[in-house]
Picture 1 (tube, rainbow, N blue to C red):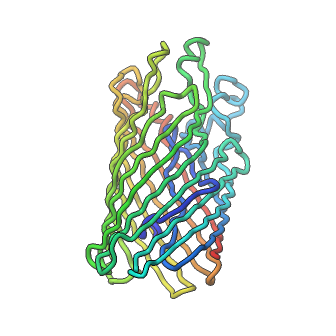
Picture 2 (spheres, one colour; picture 1 turned 60 degrees about the vertical axis):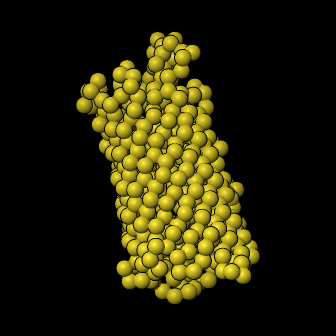
Picture 3 (cartoon, rainbow, N blue to C red; picture 1 turned 120 degrees about the vertical axis):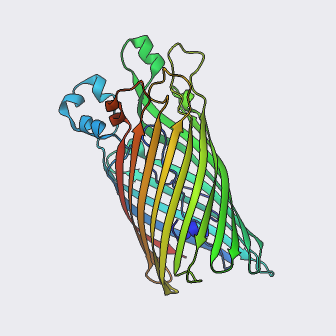
Length: 379
């Protein structure tokens, strides 16, 4: 819901890697790379270097953070097998590059195509290093006072480390808890349309998309598709870009493969339905080339897990509530350089099913704070 979100995602082909942190034991955060910038003609290049501090890189519960720091757990193989990370927090260096082509037709219709990449390098926990590659395309469908713009985005993440998880079948055979690394690749396709409803004052953005996730063995039961749609209204009370207020709704479902028939042990079914409301406020100042903005965003998402298998006690009847608050500030220094800072707080509150004791929520609840500073250059 920053200015880039309000302006929508244009085009980007990623040739590197994007930053993210795991959504608890279920999935990573869905954070898009920076959008391409419409307008102008020809080719452009943007380079950025971000430094980020994350106080909970795999979104561990407080209970697990205490275990990770406990020497007794470190000396116990059964307990120590819960972790491959060395520390709950880490510093991350994230270089990014983007190449963009843009064109404006004689009729005033803009087209844009961009490729982008960001590599996330963890200082103490290299197991978390990963990359994302993407392609974005934007096309004005109509001009005039009520323009319509189409955006297409494709992202591919070749490998992402989630955390250590219990392997049910291997544990059954061994007669003790066996854990392994949960890793997956994902490919996402998203379409978005922006329509100006009231020139200068009101826009509507509608989007739909699907993301396919392919987990490495032995967690094939987690393979699935995340599909959904969203709608966002952007209001500019003053009739210019100095102030924008946005509010939206998102509905998604993750359809996982679930328990495999070829094993005797019961594997988890992480299928769930999601509904989210989000709001944002953006203030802008200055004139080209010394322009800046600050954005405040908040969202709340509920996840209802849909498995009907009562023996899957950590997912049957479970509901998660995820809340995110973010503050982002960007300031251009001149035509070439800009600085950006961001602070984000996320928390998850799980209500597990009736077959889990109340203290079981401690395993799935978490809080996470991420602080970043970026410097970038446009050519």
